[in-house]
Every structure is written in structure tokens, then in C-alpha cells.
Length: 259
Image (cartoon, rainbow, N blue to C red):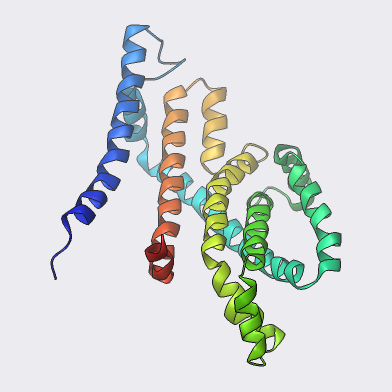
């Protein structure tokens, strides 16, 4: 079966346009450092950043692995904790009224203020970083899951009940399935925040990770190394996001077709 030209062009554009945008951004950054004669310790040029990476690639990649592990662990933990809480919220109006204000209060607390406390409570290991990522990701996971399950059409619910389906079957065979596209929206928001959460945690009391590299580089005025670490964080964030996009397309092809 031959592919439609329009579909092929769309996929090509989906790859080439982001690359073009990245090249333009790097070009403007490089041009700015040349035109305004900006010192490298203030704003390094792209070649300076590449040179900093080439000087110690092993060190940077090992720190990237630390941050990636913290990010993924905290993100998965937010799903394990957040989805069941969303199911409880949808199932009981009383519990929804009890839990929702608490969720809003926790989400409103600046996470940078919690980071030092997590170090005091849990030490300098990986645990406080994972918990920070959990706190950052938790709210979008819960909200997207609960909203998706509540948006199930009433006629579908009544149809399932007319077939004598149990409440559990209603929630898992209808509401949860119907909510999956909305859940993935929340997961994609959460995975972007997860990288931010891991970096925030590494700013305080960390001995490894890209956030730690950025802090140490800033203290020694090695701006190029800090930019190299930030570039790796951007790559990690983009890779995780599009990994979720791919997973969504594999698991929910019907949702893509409906769009």
C-alpha cells in the first residue's frame, strides 16, 4: 500500500521544522556573542559550549545519567501515587471535597522552599530528589486523570449500567479507558516538570547530577560548562517528552485517528 503524499510531507515537516527552529536559535545566539562582543564568562558561544563538553564528556554523561534516573523514578512514582488518588476522587464526592483543597495547597507551595527540608529529613542521597520530582509531577497527573474520567459521556455510562456492569467495571472498562488521552496530556506536562524538579532538588545539598554541575560551574565562573549541562538537560527533557508521545501513539492509535 502506497503512502499518501500529504501524510509523508506532514511527517517530514514535523521533523524538519523543529530542527530548523533549533538551528536558527543557535545561529542567533552565536551571532549575538559576535556582534555584541560578549565575554565567554558572561555568555559562551556555541563553540565554547561544545569545547566544554569535549573536555570532559564522561563526567557530563555520568551526571546526566544521575539526573535522568531521578527524573524517571520520581515521574513513575507520581503515576503510582497519583492515578489511584484520582480514582478515589472520582468515585466519592465527599473524598473529592476533602482531598482537592489539600492538593491545591501542596501544589501552591514553592518547591524550591521544600528542597532544603527534604535534605534535612532524608539526607543527601537520591531520595529527596525523587520525592521532589514526585511533588512536581503529582498535581498534573491527578488532575488530568480525574478530569478525563469525569468527562465520560453520560449515555455511555448509562449503557454500561443497563448491562448490569458493576461499579468497578464502569470505572476501569469505561471511564479509565475513555480518560486515557486526557491522562497522557497530564503525563506529558508532568514529564517536562519532572526534569525541572530534579534540577531544583540538585541545587540544594546534592553531590551529583546536572543541577549540581550547574551550581558548581556558576561558583567557578565556568559558564560554558554550565551551558553544556543545560543543553544536556534540554536533550533529556525533549527525549522523555517525545518518548511519551510515541508510547501514546502505540497504545492509543484510535485517539490519534480521532484527531
